[in-house]
Amino acid sequence: MRKGFALLSSFWFGAAMGAAAVVLAFLAAKSIPGTVSPIPDNLLYHYQTLIGGAGALIAAIVTVWVIWKQIEQQYELEEGRRLRQSAAARTALPDALDDLCKYAQGCARQLAKIRDYRSVEDMMYPTMKADESFVRVPPGMLREFPQAPPSVISVLSRCVESADESAAREISLLGATLQIQEARLQAVAENGEEGSDGNRLILFHSIDNLILDAVDLHARASNLFGFGRSGYNRTDFAPTQRNMSTALFLCDIDDDEYPNIWDAVRRNYPEGKPPA
Image 1 (tube, rainbow, N blue to C red):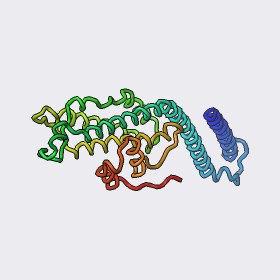
Image 2: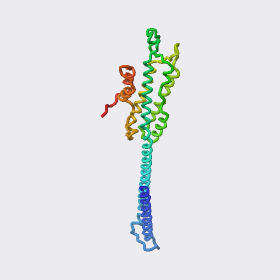
Image 3: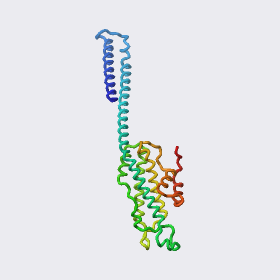
Image 4: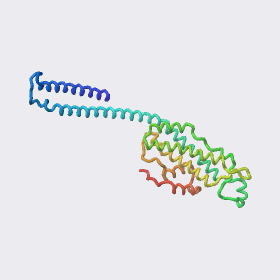
C-alpha cells in the first residue's frame, strides 16, 4: 500500500512539474518579439534559467525522497520476512536445546563414572599402582556415551540464517562447541593407551577437560532457552561462573568430589551478574 502511495505521489508531482513547465514556456514566449506581445520586464523571462534550475533541483530532491521511501519500505518488508522466518525456526529450537542439555548431562555423568572407576586390581593392591595420574577403564565403559541428537545441527543452522547478529553468533558457536566436544570425546574413547590387563589408561586431566567440555555445552545451550521461547535477544550469551555452576550441579558434578573441575571454572570463566 505504501508503495502504491509513493508511486501515486511521484505521478502527481511529475504532472505538476510538467504543467509548471508549460506555463513557464508560455510566459517566456510572450516576451519574444514576433510572438504574442513582448513584455520586456517579465521576471520569468529574465530569470527563467534560475527558475528552471530551481525546479530541476526540487524535482531531484523529491525524486530522491520517493526512492528513499521505497527503499525504506523494502527494508521493512525484508525485516518482517526475516522476523517471520526467525519465529518459524525458533519453534524447534527449545526441543533441540533440551535434547542437547540431556546429551551433555549424560556425557558428564558417564565421564564422572569413568573417573571414579577403580578396577579390582586397584582396590586389592592400591599401593602397587605405578601412576596415580590416570585411571584404568574397561573398554566397554568408553562405548556407553550417549549419542548427540541428530537433528540439532540442522535446527541450529536454520536459526542462524534468520537470527540477529549476537544470537546468530552464539547459536553458531554452540554448534561448533558440540562438534568439538564430540571429536574430543571420540578421540579419548578410541585412542586411549591399553594396559597389561586389557583396560584403557586415561589421564585424570583428560577426563576433567572432557567433563568441562560437556558442562560448557550444557551452559551455552541453557543460555539460549530465552531466545528460543520468546526471541529474547541478549547482548551476551557467553557462559559465566554462575551458568557453569548451575550446569555442574545439574550434571551431578559436586564441588567436594571434583574440586579440580570447579577450580578450573573459577579460573576460566567470568563471575557474571547475579539475577535481577
